Length: 211
Image (cartoon, rainbow, N blue to C red; front, side, top):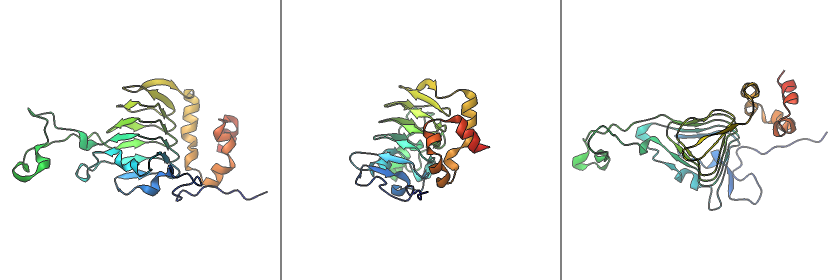
C-alpha cells in the first residue's frame, strides 16, 4: 500500500503556485488572534489583508479572536472587535479619553461583549461581518454578505442582515453524534484515512470508526 502524505499545517501556501490562499495561522502576528491548524483564508489581493479586517482589536480591551481548525474563510470577511463599542451612558458617545492630553482622564467605559469564537469546520462566505462577542458553532455555514450579530448554533446555515437561520444541516441526533465525533481533533493520519466518509457524510462508516 503506497504511503499517504498530507499537507503540513505549517505550510504558508499549501496549494502549489497559488499565492491568494494560505493556511491562516502562519500569517498571524497579533497574539490576540488564535487560529487552529488547517484553517485557510483566500484573498485575491494578498492573504495579509486578513489581519487588516480584524477591526478595533486593542490590547487594552483584552478580547480575542479565536478560530478553530479546518475553517474556510473567504475574501473580505470582517471581525468587529470590542474596541468598536462606545460608552452609551453619557450624553455623548465620543471617546474623548483615547486622544489623551487634557482629555486623558475623561471617563470611558467601553462595553466588552467578550471574545469572537469561531468553532471548527466553519465555512464563512465572502464579505461576511461578525460582531463582537459572537460564537459560531462547529460545522456552521455563514452565507455571503451576512451580518452576524448573535451566536450561531453548530451545523446550521445562516444568512442575511442581520443573519438568521436558513436551515439545519442535519437532524438533532446526527448533530449530536458529529459534535461528539469531533473528527477535527483526530490525528491527521486518521483524518486522511477516512476522508471519503467525512466528505460524503457516510454516517454508518463514521459510527464504525467511532466505536
